Image (cartoon, rainbow, N blue to C red; front, side):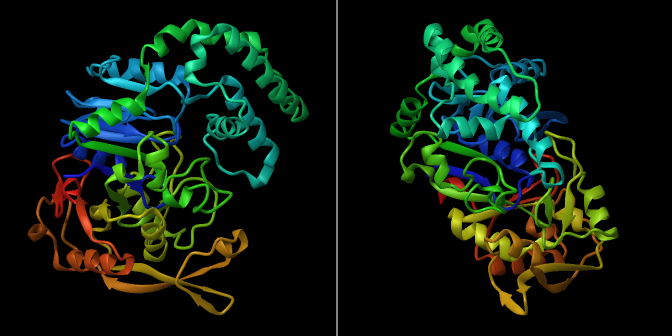
Length: 430
């Protein structure tokens, strides 16, 4: 028996919410280890839909401990709002069920203002951020001027840190033509919620170590996808944190051996929200069909997702750099009825064939995908619960993907419903 780390292998939106929820029924502890409330995980349980942004997906399961690790940046107002919303759906959330690392960095109102001002200043060169202050908060963390959850326990120190923080940000806001912000206003807002937020604060690393010693199963839940990783993604059109499995260790406060089996959530086609390179994008009827059938709109932003063919080269690269042991293949049913299906097996760049996705920004924009074509299937795979229920061509499509990416399919998802899942190998048992 081992722990499991779940990450996205593409540009996010791969269907992690359902898979994490499905796995959380087998886990004792569920941990978020990076990102912020820019993530969006949709869970469908007994026909009830939960839309989570910051809370770990295990929060909707009774008897589980949900953890927000130090690698997550937390907007305390968004957190409390989400807690109330999910409570309103009948979920019990208390300091006994939700634990937040006392050393996590907090997203302040100025961070969202900076996000907005910087995106506006970029003009046509926008990065496509969610404008929720994630990037500026990580910048402050690295620059050692961030506000941490534990700082709320010391009002005097908090006021000093806020004053120093706002000297920096107000100068930038003024230079960008945006309104400056009074640090006293932020201080007052924080003091109004400090006691409530601090009720969830604790030494997460100790809780996880105790769970490990007791032989409990821990599920580490990532947000976004490897191709949005700040080091390994389509830089600069990326998020502001590391998404690869190694981040689960540093973002939760555990040793690297504790992350266990790494499961890469992988959509049977490819989608992307916002700007940035997308070699297999289909700006045509086929892309529209994928988007309509897959209901491809962002959980967090509501933005329409760009759609395209499966990129095996990119996923193979994600498998390698992120240490993915096996994948959970999602949304296979969206491809039902396509006469032909294409899979990208490499790229052409200036007449040279590449078997990897290059790091350079210009090269990423210039590569042309090399495709192989497979026969589609007319039968429905929606709701299939065993491999024998799948059409032969669908089985072949899965097998080809496994061969091209160099990783086996552990789990196959055939609808948003939790029960419509085919387990080929249990990640908790290696």
